[in-house]
Image (cartoon, rainbow, N blue to C red):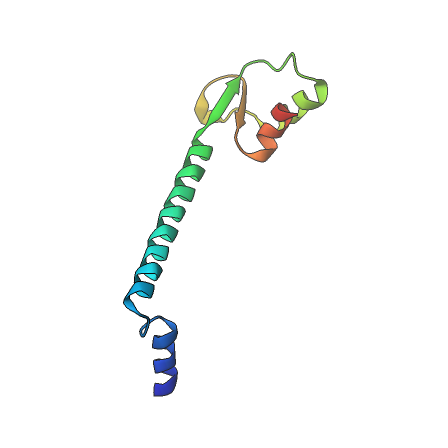
Length: 95
């Protein structure tokens, strides 16, 4: 119905004063910037890895967790334990 369409336009900001439209536009811009920043942080988190060749000085329980969670990937071509910034991998390091 036409009345529903008009209501949707009003709810979407069609009759807002100029200042309110500016605030709404700024909020959309900030929201887009936040999503870009969040994506950049996720990309950086996924890209980081620490390769440790020895876990000898660590307590046994932490060593076992790292051996389970931080195995090197075949494409790395290096020996050692890969510790990333994802929770199962870095938790034993922090403890």
